[in-house]
Image (cartoon, rainbow over all chains, first blue to last red; front, side, top):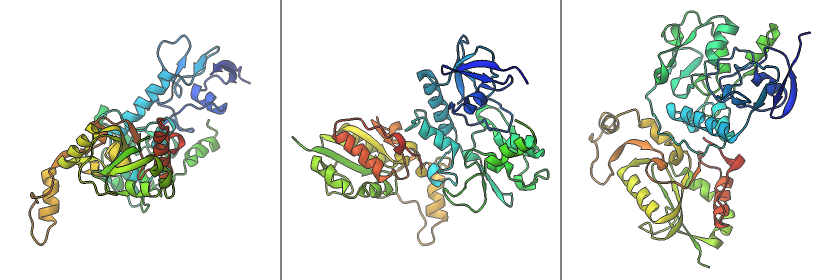
Length: 235
Length: 176
């Protein structure tokens, strides 16, 4: 048995396994830290910045999903400062692209929408970017709507790490970043795509969906990705 | 005590938020015991009156008329509510924002017309470059998202305001 480390999360002392992230330990102990790009069963990338937490003695905030627990660490998962930064991060996500909940297949089942409601966001304080973005409908079964993409890369990781096909990548930089299939080929022409649909199930928003569903109708089987990893003996 | 004066209007919206307002059913009786609706699609007044206490505004700001009405409502009201996703985010009306207005109008009134093609200019307000949320045009005191906001959320907001409290939507907060 590996030696346990003791950490304090919101005042409670918890015994954790070395190598576990703060987020994993917190969630396993019913402590809620919001997150969007994190998905159990996939590697963590710390992209969405929603899981930022305060660690005593560390001057900057750290992402809970990519920070391993350490002996004696004292973590605060909530504070007025964290709350304010989480709201900013979410509002920026909403204003960066066109998240029109009212006409989205994933409305009511969307992690971004749920997080906004949970964090008490009533409106975005920033100007909307209103970019003109494409919708890739070339795949016979699935559709990719860049308007709803938050660049969390859960699809990229699900495809590369679980399916082993690595169809998806991010091209471009900064606000011009776009999800691309097979070096910018339309999804329907991507020969490495096995059409397994794990990317669709992993997607937190309506950016990826099965064809044929109307507004609010697309529900995702997110547990599929997590279950596959655990059945293969992963975390 | 004088009754509270409520004004309502819809800008670039579908009237769904006003339908949801009507959906508060018998709740309207309690509201109207304490308040009068002095302007809006539900009453006859032709001009937004002075001295309104609560302005309830549905829809995105999309045309010059929308902008003017929003500014008048703001200037003559103490408390302004952005009601519904169009007023809060731009929502569906803002889906045109990636297209230049001239192209948009030509696509519909020239390419799309069979009888008398031509972009109308008489009696219709000019479109703004983009349809945007209300708070980008005027100061907004409270945002009530939803497409439409549920009737119980609207009733909660009105009841709380009539009691002199600032409403907290809590679990009734919802986009879409």
